[in-house]
Image 1: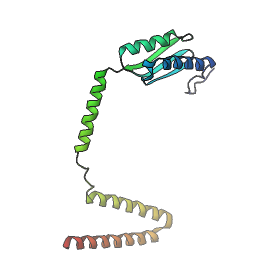
Image 2 (image 1 turned 180 degrees about the horizontal axis):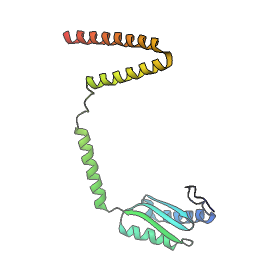
Image 3 (image 1 turned 90 degrees about the vertical axis):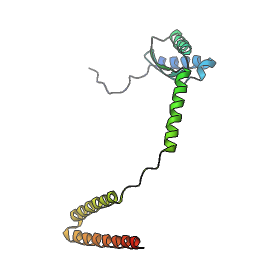
Length: 162
């Protein structure tokens, strides 16, 4: 009984040569060089992915692949992009770029949110200190945090009164 490992089946020696023959045939034609195509061959089955500019190019690419000796079947995952689709995508990109350019900056976090995060970090630090060093160190840590909070509040009051 064979077990499935989740990996693709091993490539047969003829698959590599077939893939090179197809790639060379497509690269030899000037019309196909501009098309972003990718191909794989497994057990004589060609898997074509990518995009082509027109239905005519699509027909010619798939026809050329099917006519190549050694091709048992063609798994076609090509996408046909006409000029209208390119214009539509360019327009959408332009609109998105314009929206991002005119969008106001994201607001800075509010002081209450910053304080809440600092309190959470302080509580976490205290719990860690209690676990590692014991209660005496935790009491000292809480005193140190209280002193730090007092210093920060005094600075804030000074800024508000100035």
